[in-house]
Image: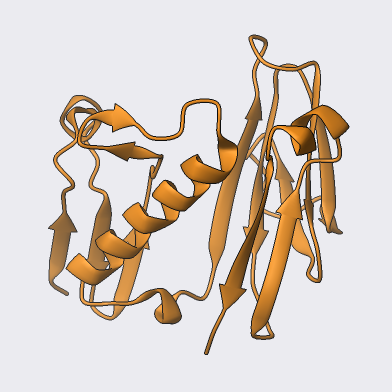
Length: 158
């Protein structure tokens, strides 16, 4: 099968050796997407702005590979709560559940839930599938994060 690599031109792709997206046959994989635009982090201190820019970067990569956001069937979110950040953090998704893989090393999920909490140094993978179209909301379960705008909405369409 033909393999097509999509590059966004960031220096990280060259340093680490990955592509923003790879298309193999009818399947497109998008990886390592953050809120970078023109070599600068968008929305410093603003989780909502960073999320919007990250999603825009994903849509761009999909379009370059001949796909659209409507073609996406699975999302993986990598959560980290490293020592330099807050002692406890959480992620809650309204209206849907997700599989949680602690530390990203298990082949089977340890939980099927809609909320996950992490302490310093902990990491994991959330794998989301959306059986229904509609609007979904996500946020942290910490008041100070909510006050900083750590919440967002997105819409799943057919």
